[in-house]
Image (tube, rainbow, N blue to C red; front, top):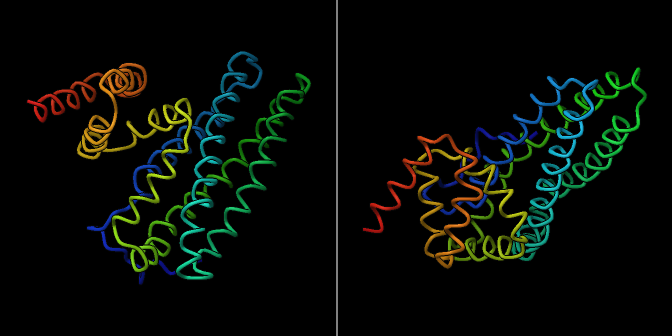
Length: 234
């Protein structure tokens, strides 16, 4: 395990891990609670929960693929071997995705007598995966980010991030935003949405607010965000 106490990236520099990792951590916490409390004898409830799990795993896999394609590839050009440990973690994640899909199918095909034990097996395996992923994200935000900041300017880091985001299909981007909005604090939420407002056509941005952001936030939090965006635009 990396000794993170001696590795402190510059918090004033660009950090493309912060927001998306907050979203994925929230997703893990919600899903672990859902798996543990699910009534596996309730078929409709279980089907909904498993669909949500598959959706979250697809987001995690997509995030991993973008990091491999853009972040690790760029870093290896300037610091060969610097992303090796992160790449090993990603390979372990890919094995976890396959094992979790197998366990999901086991729940789906279990007899009534076997549903509860199949659900417990899925819950335990997901807990291990979530714990590993949360540790992995922390290492990326400390050790790996420190190396990236040493080898790249903030403009270069933003360009890497732009390439990752630009490759995400709209439907998947909406799913990321539905997790990101409640995961961020108010200030972070406003800054993200203000940036998107400048980058998006107005009808697209309004659709994002109404279809994705509003349903994902408590009413008072959404109202606070809209209020501040209006003040900035005035």
